[in-house]
Length: 556
Image (tube, rainbow, N blue to C red):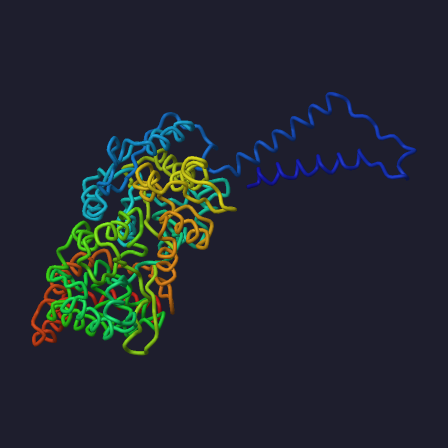
């Protein structure tokens, strides 16, 4: 520090001397300033350069992670890449136009990138296996923050502060994510155990229904759980098209359906304590008994798919595109999202006149108000196991920094102007959605690790651009994202209590067993079965997590 201060004072002295020597006011014009000798000038210049160099050395970060600030010496990093088994002919998840583009760009700064494919649907199990066997990629990703933090607490992953927190480090990454999103990846002590992706929108899921059947039955759009039950009962047992194979409901997601029954959703603190892990929230939120009683009623009435809990995503989609499905909750914009197969378009090709549209979330049975479950501002989290040395971590952060630029993440998501999109003002508008879907859209979200749902400046740009990606269904897209965030928005908590990672696996085993039992048991056995569910959660340690969260949010 003393060295830095002396250097700064020397520079200031030189500047001050120069200003006096260059004075040119009217009172000074009669006296000519003495000229410096060439030797003195060189000495002063050398001294200034030395001082500036020493100052820069003093302030420069040990690790340089802003893309282009350092030339690496042919370092190789491994990066996890979610595999959805959707690569078009002629490509694989690790060998395609876009992985090659990333590799070419990183090679410019001496970094070699090797991708490690992991099934999106088994990512947690695979991650646990790789971390335990010390074979995890240098840049590992997950949506389960609790596990990422637990690995850090066990000493198995890097604190990334020393790689991105300096003012000259990861400048593109920090500008794109923002401080609030970056802080999601910090623990209570301020250690940065992972880099969290920024969500373009926090919209989480939609409730979808066959609008054409509603119209034929002369029914209004349901606004309450009771109205929904009555409508679906008609669609299944008195189908207006005379179909006998109708599945009333598949709840591929259950986030917004739960808000209609929750007893804590109106209180932000109570909602945060309940959290978003099903096993914990279903114990803490007394309204979940009503929710499962409702599902049990639907099941015993022949409305809910009899084996809904075993359905794969492809099986779920098949019911939708063949016209057999009346109602579902699944991912926001899922009916027309090109990434998920443009399901409504296929449905209408198979069943002309059919329309599967999103509706507003149902009113809560306790207070009559409307609530919408929403993601937190962060998406997936990327972390670096200790099996990667410091140089590899430095290169990984440089990779994420490049991904935060328009040459990186923007190109991954939107492609190239003139080929994939043209600008409408500042918003990139798709030129040919069919071409894009097979050329880049199938992989873009999984390659783009610092942003969930796309590279956008704000949510308005996201909505405008996304609507253009589904030609003919622009209104559906806009309605989907608006309906997903109607009423009071309830964002997921990002806090992970200390015992969550330790207890969550056992709690989830209990949940998986009893969710099925509670839904499929005879109505007369529901209350006793749900009581057993709560008892088993207690036995598995759920109260420990509740106590920790209560202390965190209430300070008790």
